[in-house]
Image (cartoon, rainbow over all chains, first blue to last red; front, side, top):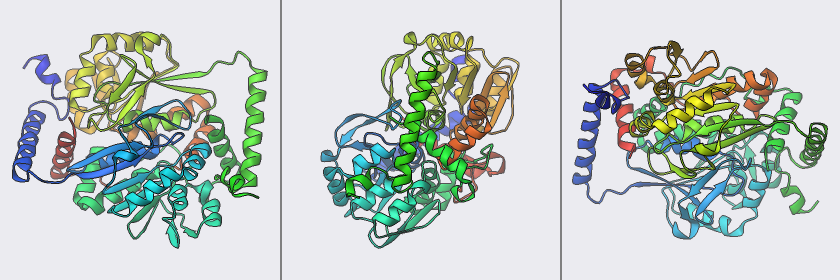
Length: 254
Length: 254
């Protein structure tokens, strides 16, 4: 076996992976042949200037592994969209004008500037309302719940959001905040802050494709979390740590 | 209070957030005034065609919250770099030719095609070796460990990688695989698959900025993981689930 051959199969050693890849390719071809009109699962993730990087990318990593899933990054205009820190840009491959239907919509959160910008962008809110009418699932991560609320989609519902935005969500909108990793209310699923999008996406994956597939996706992304500290739950955090966390956020944002 | 005023402070309600933001701004100004030559912490994340989305974006979310941290996405050439699924592009803001020094280097993993491409790209491997000479920390996520190994950086070391690449890592290189979320060997830290980059980044944050800051970052990104299933550990997975996970990966990649 030449070095080139072994290098082509870095997953599962050598022969096993080659066999696996061949089998997968054969299955994919069969599936296409058997269902020439089989519809893809259209998953759209809305980006806006000042979004938080992990909010859309965590769920995209998970959901893009579902059979037949097609994940598309969408924004008001095509092109690069910068995060709240200004240091990373993700490409929106479609503008909202180009997307009229989605099976799944995900609205990420952002820093204060980005979230407020999205909440006050009437074109964006109108598009969210239009898309929501025909989705199977409408979802948010972090302060994305505030954007859904500003679009009027959370009226009279239970929802979760970023821990530091819970008071705002409840005081400004007709929403009952639930301090959970994700909350389902009808076809709307909201996730808590930033990293909670991963947990929500796995739950969503089970709703879309069933529990065995969701578990396989979890193994595919090796999501067996073992953070070195246990400081991520705001309910257990003292006021100093909360203030420190918000200061780090404020100072890292542009 | 007008709606505009309340909307400007969606974190921590209203007055508290405004006061916080003002205090943070004042502190930032003071810090700049006090240390006009204070060096930023330069964190570079290498992208290559076919990388896995969460590998660089999870750690970028965490590390970009560190005081003075400057996270830059880097690739062989500036511009859009597509993931293994082809569905998302992240912008490389700098080319490798433009980056001669980094405090922290992170090499993400990718699908089979992307990983092999990086392992066989001599310009990339040369750059990794050059940068590594002066880093404080050189790190990888998932099959990024194979790229570090191909660059010769893991010789004689312990390391971790994606569960399905462990055999390959051990058989092709002089490396002892350790089935941990992250493994430190000198100034090199390798993480297990995809989502393990989050755990590794928090550990790295504590090494860089101390445990209190790392904990504040953990709270800032609300990293209190509660996956709906417990299927992410390959050591506990049966052969069927492993095969299913690898099939989903193979079929989702382009």
